[in-house]
Image (cartoon, rainbow, N blue to C red; front, side, top):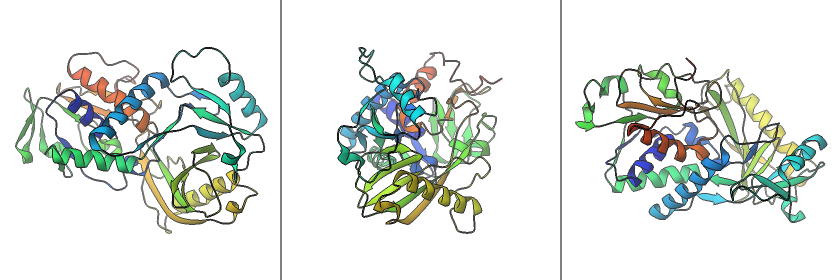
Length: 354
């Protein structure tokens, strides 16, 4: 997500760009459900800097769709199922009002417009719709991006050994095996950044996330549902259910030999059953897949971007955690601005912890 956003934003600016990707099937970008949600957490707070990042993301993904001829950015209200009366009261008090909105992207909720959209869901404390919400089909977006840059001869699929391949000691950066000289390089490696010397000191606080794919012929919903976890309809009577948050297991192994994977599976099935309790879907379902990836989260849940301490032409963009779909387009612009001399906000600079 980070690397593709940088490549697109650089391309939009007319910069000569080369995207290098190792095509890791189990990267957090490919496993992610791509949810873009305005209100999160137990405090019913707006996602951090929501108005700024959402407005940029909406324009960005629509533009990429036009350029690739693909569809992967789905803007639609998401259903929020309340778990308690107190939670319902908090959401209504904070986000349902008649005041004039400060922007078209300001988070808000509204009553569910029709009971049919809740059919099959367990809503003892009622539900609402959250706006504006969206979902990025990350697999389709990444595939479309790669195909576009392949046509431009601007992508290489390889597992780049940064320590061996990058020469950062001059006024440009050389990629030895490609015979390439670049004015700047931006490493968007997620948790793999810990495997090379350049940004091994990034204050990452990674966490594994598991997602189930469930098939159910009885559940009929076409909106993303949030409650105890989330449910995402993907067509063909199939749904994604997620996601767990595990800091003690940092692998993507989903085999039956991995106790963390088994525990995650049980937890996600319980979340499914809690959201569809009392309906046929509580019994009529089967698990058809499980995937896991390690999110590149940071210690304070804010992104980690900025310039290398020694090599002025080397930058990083990392630490997007579970907000990659929302924040990547805006952060990519910030990094490119920094390359051309703009200061990086202190709340984003990867060195802020020091």
